[in-house]
Length: 104
Image: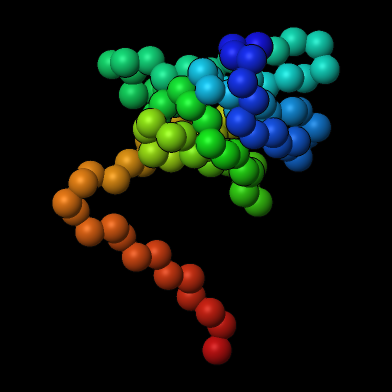
């Protein structure tokens, strides 16, 4: 494990256990722990190391909230160099408004 402080837990649709910590994200498959970290200068990494939440959408994509780096989208089905995409708020800019179309 990357840290002793567990901040959140999530079991994905394949049964893997995702463990958010104060210093990185861990995926446990029942035998091996794989760790993910923020890497300065690497856009294909987590947005931050303090993991505040994780969820998986219907497409199997993970959305990881970090205290120090916004939200990171993790798509394990994407090519390795494009699995991570970061989203963060820039102070002083308006937040986007997302709308869902509802059927009439």
